[in-house]
Image 1 (tube, one colour):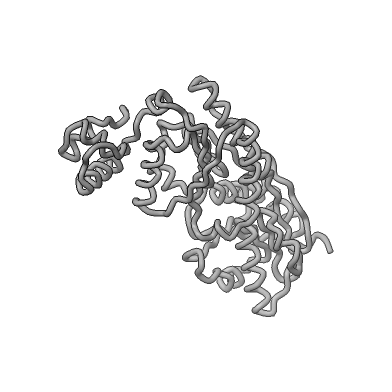
Image 2: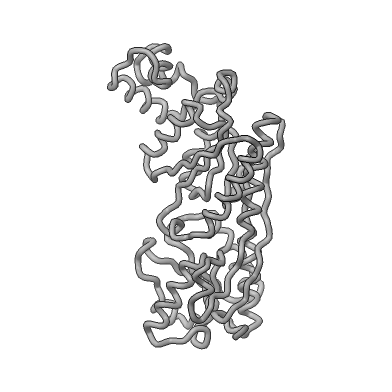
Length: 333
């Protein structure tokens, strides 16, 4: 499928090619109404100016970190701060600037990204933890600029990514709970669709099926909705593999409000090793991701791609996670 062209943008907006070009590049005398019509036409067909043409005008030597997390992700301190620090260090060492770009979850936000790309403000992007539907919408927009996904590993040919092994981590957690004697083990996923949640569900599910046990999956209706703890208790759940530490801590709080004990009445395992999991009681069993290393891999790949060109092979790295066993699963303390 061919990429959209400036000619198609001009035809859709019912203007000449020169007017369309001036509107998109904010040059010349173009009325605001015409500029908005041209920008809407470009967004509608996913038009982005040629990256090669932008390079001819001069590279900015800048990399953008594109952050567009749903509200749940924003509570995570470690997941964003650690890789961001690694990205800052790696880009500075290579004499690149780093721009932080927060993208709202709507069409105007995506239009803002198109404008950033057209203006040549950045030469490449690190896309942090995109949701699958949103990445599917944006993949055409991103195809003309070097980029790498952080915290997502979609099964899409040619896409570069660096991720941690959520599939393997969830499998380890489930086997650990089976070894402790649990058979009614559930997986608590987030309300929204997420690459990591999908991977962790698959790791949990496959271990349960190998043990001839029924996988049990639960989710809140929205990110701030009550957790289905009563439903889990009614179904006889005795152990939970939660998508992340945020969900795990909420489960523990809900159980304690019901005068139930963790891990005696229900064992809980999270994911991310956020600092608050070490300060609570019982301390949270979880998985530590190599976030600093992931950030450095993302930066080094993108810089390599910018310096060496399109022949650079895609980066598709999935790094191991570390199981941190504490009291919440019942195996220590």
